Image (tube, rainbow, N blue to C red):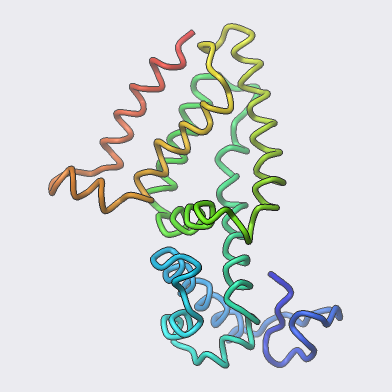
Amino acid sequence: MLGYRPPGTGGSPLTDTSPQRPQTRIQRRNTEAILDAALEVFSAQGFRGATLDQIAQAAGLSKPNLLYYFPSKEAIHVELLSGLMDIWLAPLRALDPEGNPKAEIMGYMRRKLEMSREMPRESRLFANEVLQGAPRFIDGIEGDLKALVDEKAGVIRTWVEAGKLAPVDPYHLIFSIWALTQHYADFDVQVRAILGPGHDPFAEAGNFLDMLFERLLAP
């Protein structure tokens, strides 16, 4: 967590460094309710448009009760982004240097597309933060995310140099996978409006992206 202190543990949420007691069942439930409500509000309204009153109402709590758990709107937002980063990096971490190169990259693309299907609010939360210049999370992007992308780009470059993949730029390959999968979460309304009823955008996207990357990556 961010260093906030649940009610009943004593001390200032931001300045007291004494060990925190484990949360009670009710405190855990309220914390989860706040984070889930905040995810809904932030993904719909963005950071600037969201308010603590909106989050408290969505969580079924009073604003003073919410502030026992988190000292500010920013604290909730950073907590969500911190948790999201671990989830967001997991598919790329799974890229195996010892695996079949094309199969590994295709698997990564499919995992990212499935994540867009299953976690559209999380995708929009991260997109909104980046569109604002990542003022509350630039350290995470320049730290863990950049380090992992550098590592996996090196793996892809080794595969390219060994003739196992087409001569693609590894960074822009990763960027293209992000763009072509997260689009279906971030622009869901537009995609569904254009396709019309009777379409499964993610299933259709999966078929198209399979074909696209099969051809792109073939040495």
